[in-house]
Length: 153
Image (cartoon, rainbow, N blue to C red; front, top):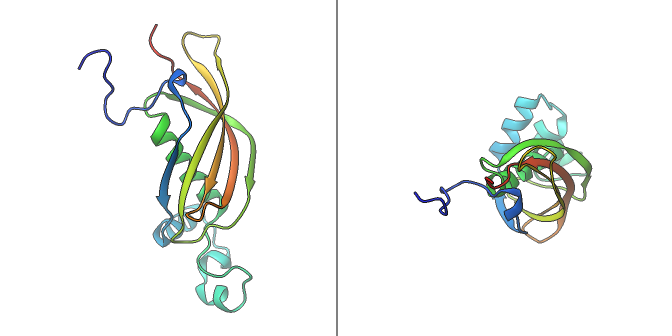
């Protein structure tokens, strides 16, 4: 492998980032596993009969935290494999609408700010991540800050 090729699956350095969209369907198994692991035993997530008869939310809703985690996985797998060093925080996270089992999510990543870090070739990257369902409706918008590796000097 020469110095100009990329290994399959490796992400970008911060200097190589561009806008992109990536998708994944949320399944009942995803929701059940997350609810069980997180201990979110709220009736909205654990009782289909309650949802059918008493809830304002019908279908099988996903917790917002799961939507965030799926969006982060899509974003990181597409852009930061082996190049991401640290999640530095969020300046905002807005849930815009519900996500149900069977919805397919896409994340559009807009680069808001890129600046070189004081140490070596590392960089700080602030993005706006817009999560949309299969109908193009925004379901979440958040702005993470990441520390990323740069190209070797």
